[in-house]
Length: 96
Image (cartoon, one colour):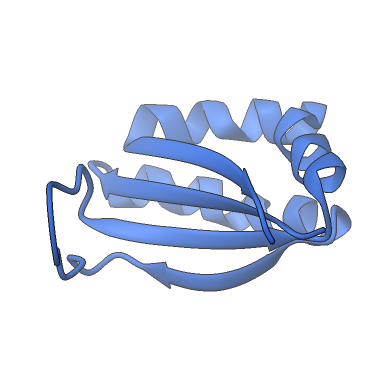
């Protein structure tokens, strides 16, 4: 069953964040990830509050693959750059 990461994101240091992006796809691809949407533009808030300027929606084949990506040593190291350059709220949910 597919699994999805949903991220709210606000980038504070675009140049620094670019370094994160440069290393992102090889690791992501290796774990079977698929980007469904990515936007650095403000989202349209339909109801309630939204804690970020943009959104990233990522799909993985299953929860195991999603967790393997998140916990991969090379991604853990890369995520340090993301944390220094952007504010992110990230959730993982299993699909239907």
